[in-house]
Length: 592
View 1: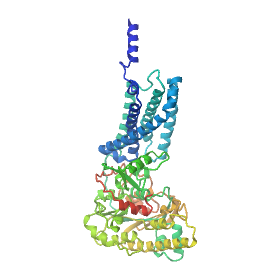
View 2: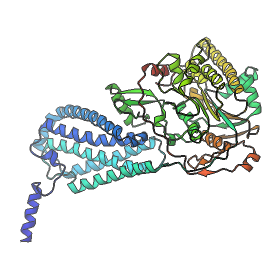
View 3: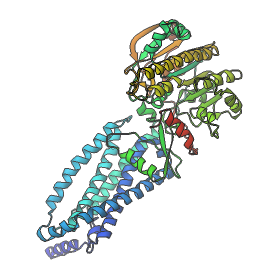
């Protein structure tokens, strides 16, 4: 009796009544070509939609807190992938239709072949995804575990579906080789668990600001960032007596070198200076981002050897459902110095720093990296500065007759604003030299006369920058000044030389005079500023303090370590697409 019952169960299973299998979605009835490829494309679109959404999330963490944007991104990807897969299978199916008709008469593919091909593909896809992950910059190793596993499963399942469609066209398969309902449930739970754990760990990280007190030192700090500064070129001019301010600065400050790292992308480097975090922490990885229609959160992609995200962004842009925009603070994960100071009631001045748009509501003022280009072109200003009543100062600071823009504009702006404000922390970014290098040496120069004229242009730019730095410094007489001179983009295989170090020069209390030859890292600047201002230092700022702090100051001011300054305040503002701004940035070489 029991034997007969088992036989009946096996018979019912073979007919598909006792256990549903995903393969039945394809196997049921005689497969028709268009219906079959539609089913495959649909399943592939869902799987790849989930998979590629995961890839976007790990390089665009603000998506975690915006479910609607995440859902829209999933829809965009899924619809795009469906169209691509349907077109591919349609062409592929028509191309192999005749050969398969012949094969139907001679061969029936076995399940063994099916499994062998699946194992071979699994090895390839896991290696491929591992290679992709290794090409990215991530803050923690758990990305590998919690994202690599579900992604590998997604791609392997789709490959099995693809194989099944080919085998169905060739002939019957002796059994359905795709996962049963039970296995499918287990795989789904595993994927959802991995993804949920990833989201949970990201959300609890820096979930709140640790309570701390500040021991005010009454030291006002000014950080002046100068991009495109070639120290060897500058020293040659100093020896000729042409850069008096820089000569005095080098003689009276404390000088630290740091190694300039590739890629030479200003948005990455200057965000590192402002946050004390490496790129894998602060998440600013490019000049520009992509804005998809209907989404608040811009998307950032990084060119990588696999090209997955780059290909998807190109698809969105070509389909006119996305548009480029300059990089913004939306994508920055770490707090900047001006945010940390402002939250504790300090007065702030921030001018032209990378990834500072939209302007933060701080005391005293914030002028973003988009303001100058918009003011120069008389464009509509949109959250480009704060507070609103400094608009007249900004427009009156622009003098197009001056030869060195935008640094002249920035200098004039500081002169005007310092008549009303005296911030505790001032951060200024001057890109003029970097722009001059790019304009004069973006292409190889073969004509000697052209080369001579280009060098003369660079010399004049250095002379102008010397006077601008002197003018800014004259407004900062009671400040401790930190000059960050970065070689800039002339290291991107386009300049005269490659491999130049950057330098940091400290002037004022509590820094002594002198120099140190051991290269430092730019991550050390932010914790040093916090320390001399009486702030604690976050343990996530792993770099030590810069050298040159007077020993007496260290004796009376101990380093205080806290766990975190908290998660960066999220913003929900949508930018208006500005084609003219992008064209201006492209002409300056920032967008390629």
